[in-house]
Image (tube, rainbow, N blue to C red):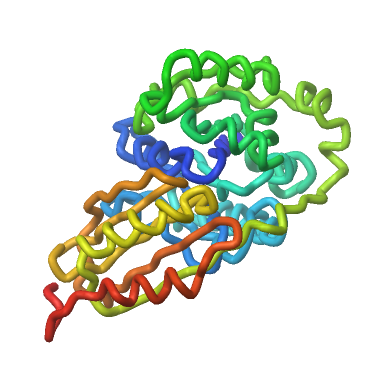
Length: 330
């Protein structure tokens, strides 16, 4: 029996993992993919950002970081996927795991070598790491997770290169080479890359990892920076889309350096579909997502991840952006 290949998508907050995953799901590759999603915080946002018209199995894990508190959940979910596949209840050819941006990929990769039930059914094909060219230097300086993500990569995809000058890009590439000299890297724009460069590449080399981290198969400890926290804002009343954008634009002028990542799916009075808003530090943008389904109650969910964030001020500010209408437009 052929082992089911598994790809781990990692990279720091806002590096473009969900964008790449969307591209993988859209591509006409003829394969069915089971997706395991992990987000840092109490509420998942990415599943609403992902395509809504695919047949892929998408499983969310949003009660912690995949590399520590929910690792047991990862083993359980992989086991459940196996059982359903063997029973004919699910049909998938491969698994893609998208980690939270604060994950150390080592414990995730370790799962495929130390858990017997996983070893006999799944094959870790590669760790694909996305690097945000605009913010990578600061992230590598301040967060050991960012360094671990680069160090464990079998492929490095550098995103947002249009936001920096050629000399800065060259210096970044040199720094990445010092951290990881074995992983090929390429420049990508909005997740556009050949799938043959990231899937079925048999890129994970256990011996090479053991040279980097000799305790890879024994050490399962992992700690996050204590000063990084998250909170979720929820609201079922409709928003004024323009006011939300103006408010986010205002707070990033003051707190942009503290905002590591912020993303939300917004219910707006003047937009019939989900409005997706995402940002990293001082950069943010909006896009139109899927339509609200007839059976669901529209709800805004907005997650903020950062350092010493003014949570109450942000909550009050968003409350001021509600649409001033007697009844919401659906």
